Structures are given as structure tokens and as C-alpha cells.
Image (cartoon, each protein chain N blue to C red):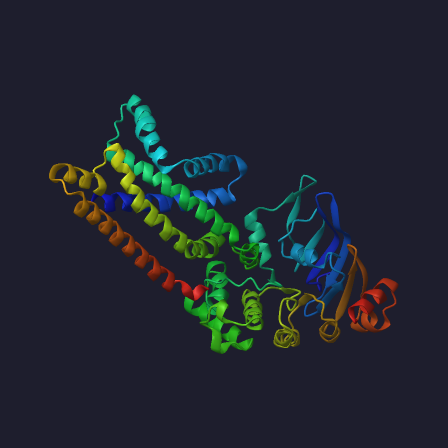
Length: 203
Length: 255
């Protein structure tokens, strides 16, 4: 259960922040862009496991200095959210940059201000474009949640480890874990297909 | 003075250190159809883009229906208006682009009504009525709920024309609107423009269709190397063609 919930939260947070970051990466001025660019490049540039450990140990240590103690689960969610935010930000930036400049100009010529161009022209087109790569990120995050067993979050894999340690016979437990992930990701893919179909009028 | 819908005085446009044009002057009366022809890079498109404030300009003035657009003088200093004023001044004119630029996520009708609803604050049912009427006028009554991807280039361009007309601009600007169309689709778009001309729409048309320009225009402007090299009636420009540069240009064109 934890696995699905973990991935679900991470995907929700990552999608929201990622789209926001993507817009900043595309339209922010260079000073505003810099910290976001740095964040996205660092997260995307280092292995996910290193990010998870860094947040668990380094962020956990820094926050404990402020009197805030992160649970394993909390730092796990932060780590997965950071991973998905970086992915979605990059996808969003790419989608935005692929929208022809003529779209903004056409919006201007009918008197739309930039915020209206953003809401009625750019945003809907970006959402439609990022659906397929977003599905990919969502399944990656679900699978990535297994890495959190290494910081002691009792997600599926860790639970299976414990069951194996108690009862022996590894095969059925690990196979069940595989099957559950396969089912979750199949559901995500189906959901994605549905979204793609709904939005295919546009191509 | 007051019988002019557009007056351009000594317009100057630079991109960094590159001059696009200088000292461009042009007067357009209501219901007049003005064509602009000239070599590529002569500044025709940029001139249109200045009139609808998609480009900034560094000197001179553009006055549309008595409103000086883009810039004003504050304490004898030339100041650019705010984005908000730019937006309101842009709808004095309407523009049709070479590449259509329809909004792909909206139907033909929604392309037309977006500006009516969000800029002119007309309510949706009224906007739909206006939109349907205009789409019928450009011969697309059957296609009101089609998305742009399902329309041919010629149909898309007619939607784009209707979208611009819907905002009731004082002047329509056409920027090489048939250049990216297959030859067999050019006619239907030109016919719509001719009909608009007949209905008394004020228009400035940048075009490479010389026969069309000859037929539809009251006045033809020949631009060359960032200047207006000649202005005259279609007859003066295309038949008399007194200027050697103009003769050469038209000769190259008819090859």
C-alpha cells in the first residue's frame, strides 16, 4: 500500500511543481532561471539513489539542526518528489519551447495580454503535449519507490524482504512484488492511453 | 488629416545595429486597399509587424484612427506604452499570418470566439453567433466545430481571416497569406480577400501575387532596401513602372 501512496504523492507534487518550474525555465529571466536550472540539472545528473541518500542524510541532518525531524517516509516522499519535479520540469520546458512563436503572436494580435495567452493558449497545449512523457515519468517513479527500502521505508520490496527473512521461500514473495508493480504500472499506462485518446483530436 | 485611417511618419526600425528601414511614410484612407510589394528583406513584413505592435520601432510615429500607438512623449522623452496599452492598441488592426497560426487545441469557432469572449467580454452565446456568421461568410459554415488539423491550408487561412475580422479592426493586415499554400488553394483565400475589399474593408496586403495586387489594390507600394521606393496606382506601378529598380524587380518576378 505504501508503494502506491508514496508514488502517488510524489507524482502529484512532482507534476505540479514540475510544470511551474518548466514555465520558469522557459520564460524566467536569467537570474530567476539559474537556481531552477541548477536544481533540475543536479537532480537529473546524479543517480536517483544518491538523491535519496542525500535527502535522507544531508537534508535530514540540516533540518534536525532546526529541530525538525523527518521520518523515513517523509524524506522518501521529498526525494521522489524532487526526482519527478526535475523530470516534469524538463519535459514541460521542452514542450513549451516546441510551441511555435506564432502562437503567442496570434494571441497578441487579437488583443490577449500575456497572462491570458498563458492560460488559454500555452497552458492547454503544454498539458496535451506532456501527457505521453509524463506517463513515462509516473511509471519510473513507481518503480523508483523500491529504492526507498534502502532508507528503511517499509514499501513493498522491504516488506517482501522481511517476509522472506521470516518465512524463507523467496520466489513467491518477490514474484508477487513484481506482479504488483506490473499491475500498478499497467494501470498508469492505461490511464495515460485514455488521456492520449481524449486529447488526440488535437493532432 | 481626419480622413486618414492610418498615417505613418518617418518610421525607423533597427535590429541592434542593422537598419531595417528608415523614413517610411505612408497614408491610408478608410476603405482603401494598399498592397506592398518588394524584394525579400526589403522590410515589408516588418512594417506590418510594427503597425500591429509585434515589433518595436525606434523612431517616427504610427497613428491609427487618430490614436498614436506604441509610444508617447513624456517630458520630451520618447516612452514606450505599457504592455496593457499595447494589447488594447493591437486590436485597432487585425493580422493574418503566412503560417496561419491558428490555435490547434481549439475548434474553428473557438479560434474566433476566444478574443471576443476574453478581450471584448462578449458573452459566449452572442460570441458564437458572431463566429458562426463570420465562418459562413468565408465559406466554412460546415466546419465550425473542426479542429485546425482537420482543415486544409486554404481553409485554415480562411479561419484565420475570420478570426481577425471578428475583432472588428480598423485595418486588416495580410502578411504573404498565400505563400505557404499549395497552388490550388491560393484562389479560395484570395477570393475571400477580394470579397472583403468589395465590402469596404481597409486593408494593407504584403504579397507576391502581382496579378492579385494589380486587381484588388487602390494603391501599390514598392519597397526596396528599407525604403519606400515608389507609391502609385496599380497601373503606375505594374504597367508604367518608371523606376529602373522596379522594372528589374517585376522582370525577375515574371520569369
